[in-house]
Amino acid sequence: MKEPKKERGKTSHYYSEKQDSPVRLNRISAEFFGHAIDLWTSSGVFSTAGIDKGTEILLKNCRIKDSWDILDLGCGYGAVGIAIAKAYPCARIVMTDINKRAVKVARMNIKLNALKNARVVQGDCFESIGPKPAESFDTILLNPPQSAGKELCLRMISESITHIKPGGLLQIVARHNKGGKTLGQEMEKLFGNIEILAKKSGYWVYSSRKG
Image (tube, rainbow, N blue to C red; front, side, top):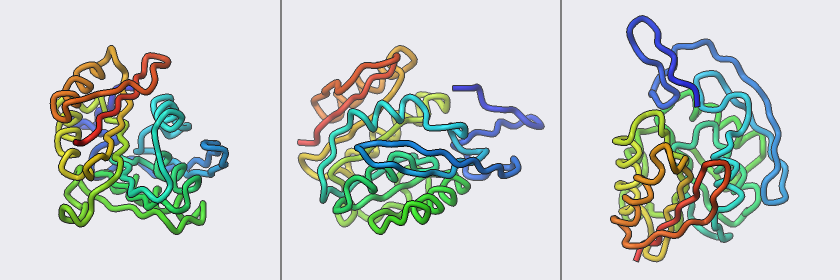
């Protein structure tokens, strides 16, 4: 992951609410769960050139059931949520991101893939998610913005537990030797359990179940 670009004494991140860079759209295609998806990506949103390795590994190794309520936390342009919504038409997908441009592009991707079971909200972590327990999830999927720092990633994990149904899962992907180990330890501390679903290319997929 590239270091954030600095401009005029400030740091512009894809995980910021507003992006000042010119909008440059790019269209990509991918296949997950045996279903093809088309996606718009954009400048100012993570992984513009194509689906990043962490997201790919998460999608190929996560546990999903049709009819589940699913949250794609920090969705970016929506690769995780779009792929799952396409493959599991009875699932209900919510995607959220702080980045207003990412949210706009994710909505474009819902329309592009003609999905009826997905929606996107804009906000910092869970601030735009409905009140508990009215809006809780069978699983939350997260590719945490590790370049944003450990504090934010830990907050995303700690706030997740109150939005997961009993028996539900938090599933995250992270670079194990670049801070992922600490995130996994936090999951085990909060949930009392952890399972490693995959190890590939330096990325680990961690899963914890809410009791």
